[in-house]
Amino acid sequence: MKPSLRLIHWHTAEARARAGRLAALGYVVNARLPRGSEVFRELRRRPPSAVLISLDRLPSAGRDIAFGLLSQRSLAAIPVIFVGGAPAKVAAIRARLPGAAYARWPGVGPVLRRTLTRVRTAPTKVTPVRGGVMAGYAGTPLPAKLGIKAGTRVALLGAPPRFAATLGTLPAGAGLTDRGDRANLALWFVRSRTAFSRGLTRAAALAARMPVWVVSPKKTGPLASDLSQPHIRAACLAAGLVDYKVCAVDPTWSGLLFRRRGRPADPPRAPAAQN
Image 1 (cartoon, rainbow, N blue to C red):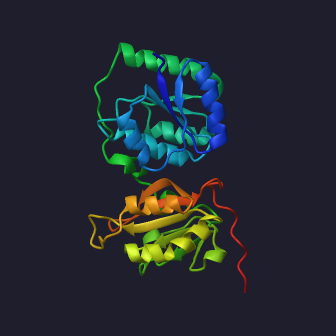
Image 2 (cartoon, rainbow, N blue to C red):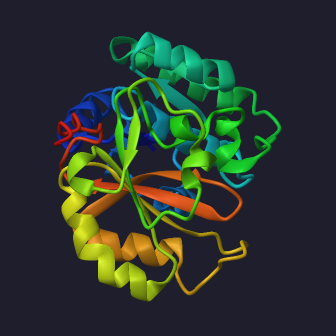
């Protein structure tokens, strides 16, 4: 029986091409676009021989999936191989996950063979990474978790009072606004299913132009309500959006990052402010 691989990649055409090359090496490859935490349920149902995570696009999302795998006892035994990516991004992930395998696409075949041979001949005791999926965020400032970079213009929609103070110091040139038309990244805070349903059309329109965080109360927090992340994900998927990142904002709030299916995930340049 051929070994099975789960390829995590965020560009459908590129994933298809990579999967074709892996299949030519003798593997059965699943390269479907990952949809948030659904990928973990899929892997528990049908564990592959290895998970390959492309770092060519959305390296932080790939890192988070790896932490999610390694933090769950039922998944931690699946070998993780990071492939491609900018050297600086790869080095940062390698520093946090030295036990994973790393490869460039031209040399992925030998790395795969060595990894799978090692797993078959010398299985190791499974020790999940402590701290869960957010373990990789230890010590990371909140703006970095949210993808706020130099020059990013962030729309705060429905944010709680003093949330700007929660964000802390922003990168150079980054700023906050309450206008979606003047931003290139949005944080939409919703407290109930009713409020979410009323605002979904607007959020979907924003996500056609920029990534949108849908930030909702944690189920274990003081603002817990009838709104849950599975409900948010299902409704957003039906509206043509796809989630690709999760963030624990603070003890009260947690967010899912969405974009319009098929559009680039990186924030576009913010519109110039009008006087």
